[in-house]
Image 1: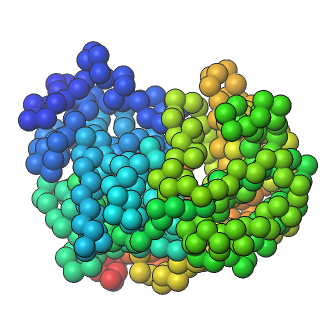
Image 2: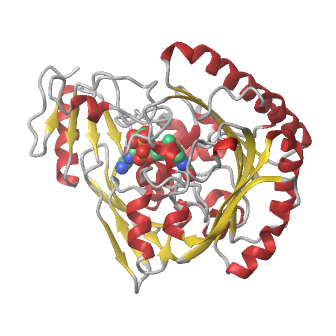
Length: 460
Ligand SMILES: Cc1cc2nc3c(=O)[nH]c(=O)nc-3n(C[C@H](O)[C@H](O)[C@H](O)COP(=O)(O)OP(=O)(O)OC[C@H]3O[C@@H](n4cnc5c(N)ncnc54)[C@H](O)[C@@H]3O)c2cc1C
């Protein structure tokens, strides 16, 4: 534990500072840890200084983006948190169709800047989530079936590695490091800048959701499965088990009602969207239809209420090869007992461009999944934790036999990385870790242990 605060060029905040509590907080209130110090870095040189200071004193470090990981990995007890949230600039080159963004930028920042040029990159479906952790794990979003995962559009990253050096990683420079950054999480260094390839999108897309009474859940999930079996790449979609929120778009009489929703973002023409989404009126009688043409930037904000944070969250997740009737039955079994209005079961459709990238092109291991599920129990009264954990645990246990692995950005605290990566991928990540971080300085993450010397020699 650091006895004194580091003296760096950038602001350093420690316990006792009035800003400390706000800065140590992460999205999931269950993570209540007290770093020894938080360095509010302003550029790569500050990151190098912070890292050097910590290494000379054996102080453990963590690297923090916007703190949205459900496991709260960006801060650690007694460590030095390198807080990158101040590096939030976004520069778009509309001619080259690229964007360069700092690791503290949110998807809202990136979407606003890129859409000004009619361009976009696959980003998180909540605008306040940070780009860094999301990109380094892979990156799911409304556009992924059309443009691939976020990493499929990553062109380069600037990194401060464990030895305190700066490196640029791309397909041509440090290609092994670049491969590891594309899905391997924050294991290989602190990324100080991301460069993305952009795609023409919008500015108008067709987005929103159709809500059905929860008694129709099996029919809606089967309808969702049929919809996605023939869907164009332009259609991104989720099927969520929810309670209708107390939001202005919900008539007062329906608020709080157990429901199942198909949420969509169709980035093709309005006519194509109308044609391809017409079926949503037939899968079951809709309670509420809220789908229409809107700017992509607004579509990206539709579910922002979930991003605010400050609640206690227990998440469980998995990848699915298919949405079998047995999965539908497991979800139905637990849906009626959704433990709070904020709790959710989310099934997202993968496929399309995600599946067309070869498995070994990046470190992301779930290209062949047709769907991914996430079960989130969300509560605000600490005394209610047990009930929520029991519900999420029971549903997760029933879904687990169907899971083919877990997306690293949804892996809970203490989660096993062997569930996030295929064996060959993990072996390759361990060899890269040995090369760039043999002492495992960057271990506040879902950690890839450095390969042993003999094994590293045989790895690519
Ligand atoms: C409300 C909500 C919605 C979400 N929606 C999506 C979604 O649509 N699609 C999706 O794919 N995921 C989604 N996620 C999951 C998201 O990908 C992860 O929470 C991700 O970790 C968030 O990034 P962050 O920068 O806030 O990471 P943090 O929580 O700050 O850190 C997470 C990990 O990344 C590492 N890290 C962060 N920044 C850097 C950096 N610059 N260099 C090196 N390592 C770094 C940290 O050390 C830590 O190990 C969502 C999460 C929430 C809470």
